[in-house]
Image (cartoon, rainbow, N blue to C red; front, top):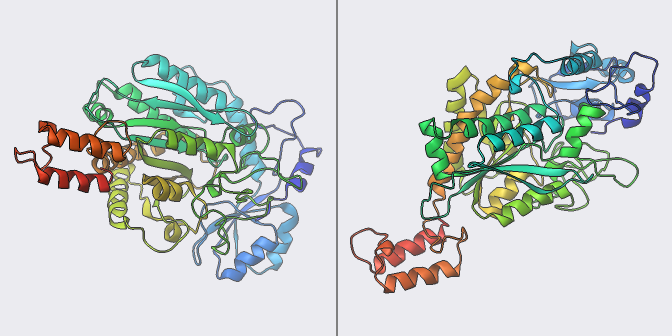
Length: 477
């Protein structure tokens, strides 16, 4: 759907009282939503969706299903047309700008000294400062590094949390978490940072976390789209894309339609992606055209130990896996479903929330060029995605900690599944890569009757061990 950018910027210069976005600077053209309504509509058929699209009424959620309620934003100059369309609706928010103003006022207010870092949302500077604080707290555990730069030159910062003292005599698998591919999904930043916080603070004192970090490393990229995230704090609260200047004067590429597996597939559906630069789901000029997706891709290519991945999104209470582009099951559907179900039960055990697990295509909608499909197909990674709790893209701050606490054990369960699946047993030279050198080194140890080569294990180093090794190697285990 097309966002009426020009009309929204015109509102910014109106004579209405303006409460800027919390990080707005003097002169910033703050996009306002005065008298924009949020309405709930239950689409009855595809014609309803086409009508809404033609009217310029934007969907404000993560899925639309026939006979299921969904939220839409209606600009004031489109409301009469919606009424005339005879599509039934219910107004749930009379003035969206009032909601945004209340959020901005809260974020600009002084915080009590006793406030937890997770009591409210944090801008990019605060996130990076807290990453540095965690690194200073446990320099033996945390390493900060940049994985690349955004289109506007901002560093994309990551933290590696690794108990390198836990020498397993082999490569450890690593779990990658990234948030805010979509800039407006602020709760995802807090969710990723909570995982980092708990791993850092509990390692060494909590047996479960200590054992988890003995078996796996974590790499966390809390703000994968820093330009878009900053833009939501300074200019437009519901901005989704990055800040790529496009031909024709529009801005932004949807980073989660820009990945290299099944990029740019037409005809998959309303949310799969678009070749229209003004669309909020514009997939860019080509696969990996964006520096933000390139940075995450290059991180994985440089670190073959990454065998788990979760792309954190909001909202909808979902646990998702491949495929996004096809209704067909993957070759690992049974294993993915078992992991998803275990994660669902772990989430429900905390606060009773029920997250629906399933493949992206059938659980939410078709997606072309998604990160999850690329990680799964191209890198053989256990890749999943959350759609977190909340009934909007700006859930109240009292959702932050409950959401983080309920998904943390599920994230740990995904890491456990990764550890069980990717133990690097056939990575014989311990370089985190399965290649011909591992086979040659194993054969040499087999010939030398090295006891390590007794993989059967039956106390004898023989051809059975070689067959076991080849089976493990073929499965990259």
